[in-house]
Length: 139
Image 1 (cartoon, rainbow, N blue to C red):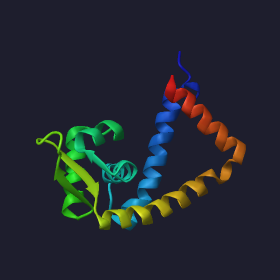
Image 2 (image 1 turned 120 degrees about the vertical axis):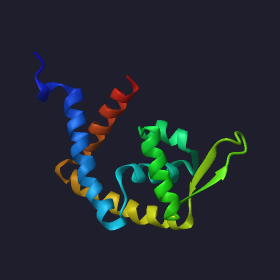
Image 3 (image 1 turned 180 degrees about the horizontal axis):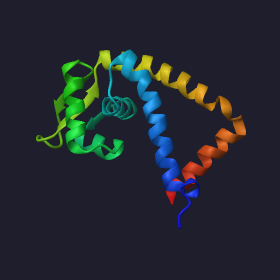
């Protein structure tokens, strides 16, 4: 029999859902963004230009969810799209000036939120946590 509180996939999944829902309150209220929209923005900020397909793969979004998020962000002028030079069928997405400004503001809020979350951990605990997560991610 599996003890759920000692089963790592269960613990990580439930913690991830809780943290994601709590953080969603930050960007949903202040910026009127959904979780998928936030993920699209975050990946575009990190990579500058990506196709929707690549965003799906990296953000763990299904095609229809990513497509809806991108469409909504395009309508709000947060992202822009241009035809890919390599594949004329694909659209390369990027953050507009408005999107970059939004991301900068949201990044500050995200860092503040994370710092408050980490108040229960000391510096060594944080380093250990990320070292363990990196090891498990490579496994």
